[in-house]
Length: 500
Image 1 (cartoon, helix red, strand yellow):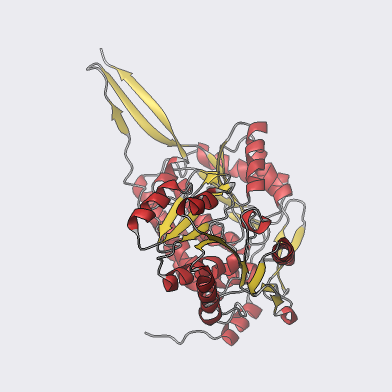
Image 2 (cartoon, rainbow, N blue to C red):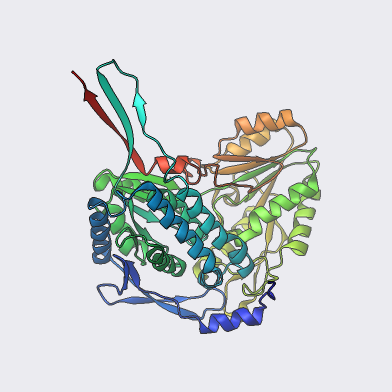
């Protein structure tokens, strides 16, 4: 039966009526912070307060880790038959799908992304990820090592124990699923610390996991600020691993905290400054579309956003014109609850001001603002910045080297392929890149030479749960997605039996 799509007015009515859960989810139930403190969660759409959220600290982390450890040690999840784990995780995926509108509205109100993307991408991809990893529950095998005739050596993959998962605010549901899917299917317990800017969908996931049959204590969600909740989680001596996605600066702190505590494992997916290398023979319409969507989707708040364009001098000006045209005609900025909008609000005032400051830095460095560059829709009380193009950027400029994390692309010209490769690799980051050319020999040379975890050819941001995601250099290490993601949440155990 077909249903009429919801209008902006419909979504605004739903937003006015929603009452998000703000308490922590620990040991299978919602609880206030032990201190009794809360913080007000405002929506970046219009500055309206939407929830009071538990302002958790070290004591709450202690309670969550204790619950997770107890669940792991008594085997209530770890020792379940694989088919039962699979059934529960598949049920969780279906509950996420059934909660589509509620979760999508929470995600949009929380971080300002447009409702059309929350509905069509963020919530479905979260469910798909949980389902993907559920299917591995009864399809993983131990190994038998070659030995002499009187010995049997079994190599087993065993869960690490308690996983601390710290996730960012730009894709809360998707990146949470990237963490908890493989961690849970491997048999671990999880303490999830969502970003203080985006706790609401994660707190809802805790309840959906309980409804699906996940035992108490196996998934705990502790909201709060990084210094008060994230740091105690990373330092906790009974946490076996921290899986972190966020800034490179905080990723380095995770490494320090691991060394200062119990040498816990650390997996990091950090910042990026991903280049598009556009050769003279490229299909400019395809390149312009890929570049525009790759930087303006989700307001540019994407770790692998294609924020640098390295274009051959002969086609650079025309490419800039076409990128601007795609932004103007296909990626309208608007109210996030308007289904027609394709760009929404930046996550908070401080972040908007940071993005605007980088545009000013670009001007001061000599770049030309070829499009955008301004705050807009200020009358709403929200935080909106136009799709922006900085042209005439040189490789040494800060806007070419530092992660802006907003709808700002820096364009630099080149004349020689080796020069373009050098520019592409002239970065502390190595998360992603793209090459645009009809010459597959050149594509092969460049994809081989670019140091990045993903390199696209004649496309951008195409992905699958079957492919690993992560970076080189200061973009971090360890991979999310694909079967390889399960590996980091496990370790090898050799069981050697001698026969007389």
